[in-house]
Image (tube, rainbow, N blue to C red; front, side, top):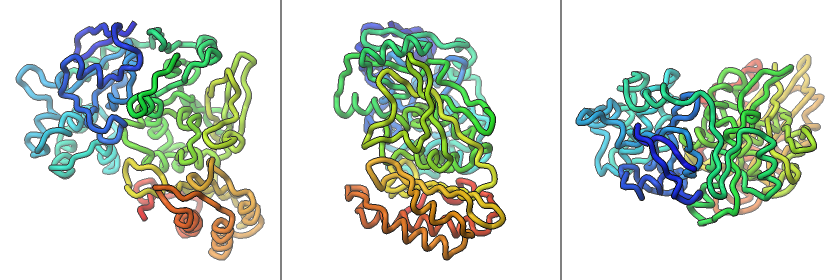
Length: 467
């Protein structure tokens, strides 16, 4: 069964196969204002607004949302924003600011800006930029579109988005449709895992297998509605983050609590991607260029997995066992990550990519140094993109311990990093380039933190290095 609201009208889409994407369904049913560009979450042409249980509305890429995932929820597309002949404020602003030429990208931009109308946290320029970073325009350029965004951000109009938010059910409903299931409890999920179901949360990765590789799975388990995988709570000495928490929520929370994590998430991907992607998905995909892993390695995070036999704790340093493989056993699910409070430490996180926004890392890194009376007593140097898995370099860490954090010590560490790494050549970067960049990030970390008295820079000032 797949029932939801689309533009404030009830819909029964139960006749459609489980692998149908929301974008496909919209266009097959004549709602073609939503465009298909890349079908992989890069262009933003397919952006729509999705209201979840509890009333949270997010701009998402409809090309990556499987239709059963929106059961019980509400969708607003560009067709549903205007009130009769009266344009939505986001549409009016695009017209007034001359933000559209060919018009292909315009529906996606309008929906992204409509989300911004209902945001109350757009208190920094980078947040405005982040709001539309996942939408591409080849004609107008971003200045007039950004002007339209600024004009209406935070105005909270009485529109279909607000009405959907107010009418949303307070709690989630389970989903069972053909080979797709989205249970509410872990015991139900374990049954599907044991039956060999493909696990999804936000489907930003698995969705690509459907749209780009045309994969069809015998059984799909969506863990995004399981309460045990939700929430961010304080625990003794740190925080517990549910594996199914969207990364946009982690980003908002970490801005104050764990700035080094926030800094990496700022350039992790588009807002539409971060609204769907989850902490657990990024870790379980186990990509060697997954940007969260270096930060969690540097922070000595612990991952908690659970199966019918109970819970067990796995240090993130032992999580990645081989290329795209983890320490999770058959029948288990990642439940949460526990992140210690880094306290008084020198911290840095870096993502090196060809574009600042919405790009895949060539190299990523995160560093943490703890000192006592001017001497390093703990060092963590973690990298992504330089091996088959995200890695730490214990030999270099041990070399730093016992010495003051000086330019000399940093240079010796950078030289050691360059000597230890043996990355692969691929289409994103050569091995020589990756090795040089990794060593230079250590040098840059010293320059950034030498006189900061343990205060990491905010993400606006440095987070992505553009070669």
